Image 1 (tube, one colour):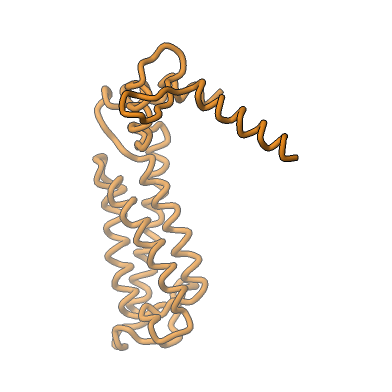
Image 2: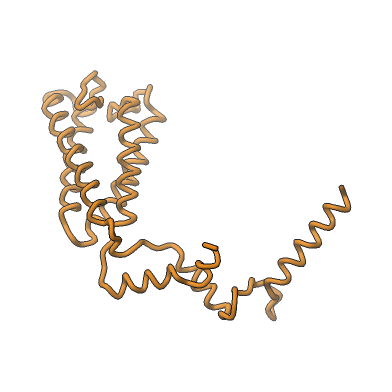
Length: 205
């Protein structure tokens, strides 16, 4: 077993040595695939984090985020109607559309619902940034509220069903934000060319 392990280490070292080189400073660099210069690989790696531009399903994603905004707005208005006159951070058993709420959470829902509907109705990147931001806010809030669900720190009066729905909406909004970016045709073409990078093609194979 020791000999097999030693052979594996030697072969692994040979593999890494065959796909790279040391520069004059002694640092090891992985060579690119094919005949492309090392700079091409570096550019491909640095360009990996990106958002698709003018995605064909973008109108569908905008409609989906708009529907989420409508639900949140209706929930917030209903919650305000049910909790009006209560303390802002009351812990009473008040429900709206199957979710427990209080006045503070209902007011916040009204604001978020309006913001999401406005973002979904615009053809600019306003909705793109709104959806990304709202998705992160919903996910973080749901996790924080779940951690304090049975304590006095549950100032938004969350129930477990509210946590689940908030997480679901956060994932939906964050997902739509990833694919609803708009831009000039040349940006979309550049994005398409980036996806056809030889290193990316090699990874697909």
